[in-house]
Image 1 (spheres, rainbow, N blue to C red):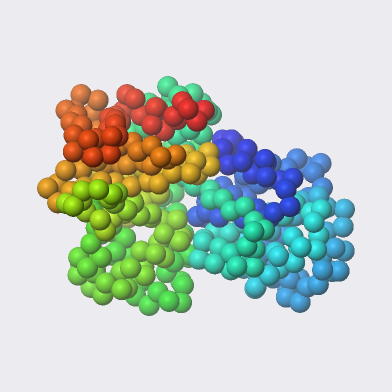
Image 2: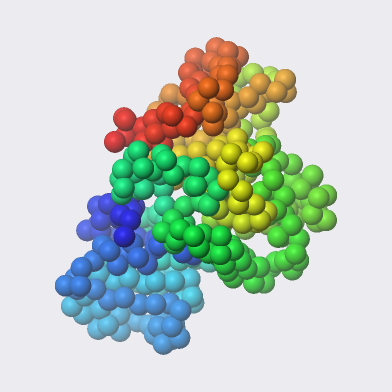
Length: 377
């Protein structure tokens, strides 16, 4: 099993009084991760929210009933907790009335679980997200050199745990994975009344990674209004399919202040949506795939290492651009992404002079400096 970085983070928080909420898309390995944290000798109670008797157990539960149920247990895991009605108040009851129990709840999507626990568990929880396998996790697993050799494959097939381990079955697994988790967690939601338009929106977003997006233009392409596009994109964010990168703006009058880019958390899902698994050397979108992979991997690394940063991109009306901008502890750093190490690199002097910030190149040969920064190791 590939050791996950988030395991170390969760382990550090286990002896506190707060609940741990673990969110993430299906098949990212949440259950596998938690089971790896607790040996068979651990005093553990594992409850599956998908099971009807577990759901009924929490329907009219009292603190006395919970104390009896959890007697002798050091840790309680509630898997797929979003299936349990009023789960937030149930978790609050546990944290308030049974302080000796370490409580962990998992959920497949933010809109089903996070929205139900935020208010009841205010100040009572640590919330984490598990993503597809990261570059750092794979480099630690079988070595940096080997993982760098596999980057072209990661750009095409992505990093879902089962896909990483599948070899020749990657295409079939991605087809099944994209359909099952997209359709189960999104298209079956009662507010999605035009599933075919949502699929069309996903495909449109897949073709626009690395580019600024317009909700109005996306709506025209997909045959839906701007407000519906915005709602669908928010839903896609909440189910860990895509994420937005807003524009950086501070000083210059000609900076684009309200622009945004939309990326996929996983390259393989993106490529499955457009049915394109051609190798990197035969593709016209290699640069876009490289940018999507780098930005998503950087955000994942920041989350796992609990780095508090602002992530942006920068562009002016004159088309001057910095692919990725990060602000942390008062320092601003820009990055330019080039797949080919020999490609011509031009630092944007306007950005550097305006913000007294460096702009650094990130290419295949030095990408580990961006994805595994030395000051955070």
